[in-house]
Image (cartoon, rainbow, N blue to C red; front, top):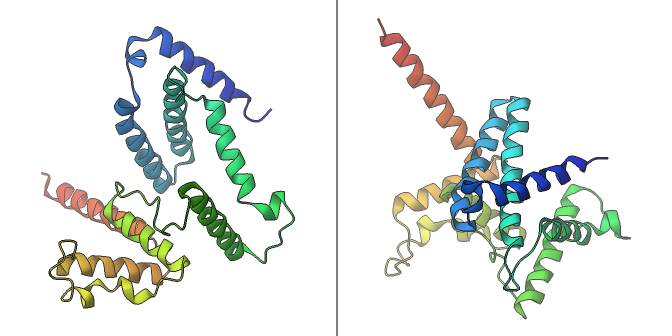
Length: 227
């Protein structure tokens, strides 16, 4: 059945945790860099257009999920959970946020699906926080700045935030005394993110494409200089 080999992976991970000295000493904190690294490697494989490489890298990402869940399952202070708890949580979330599939809600298309998702998510945040929450709650500020700016703008746009608030260049003078006021360059970069989104482009992916093009140019220059 689909997913049957996942059970084998869980069994392998449990044994490694018990019998491999390196695996046995890992913690959530020591695994954190690997979770980030493997995600980036999966993205690079996706961009390469190599389906076999992507399959392999997705396996490495999956390993990080299984590994962290195995570490969590060993806790005895009441905070532990298993891979089944992880899977159950995301399955319940998907069902809850797709009432047009698992309920009796009708939608006109993908845009309305996204609107319903955002509304359900906002209601969940309010229930969790015991009151109204900001639409920007939950945005991870540890992500790369370009991706962060795009996610903030997307969240704000879906909530009906006036688009002119993204124009940090015009508001910079009024906020000069505010320690959070950006430099002119920072405001310009933020505006470029808004321009990319307005054109239907992902600024993070566009910059990555430009970086790859620059890499290829440098390599060609290097080859031309070799005797």
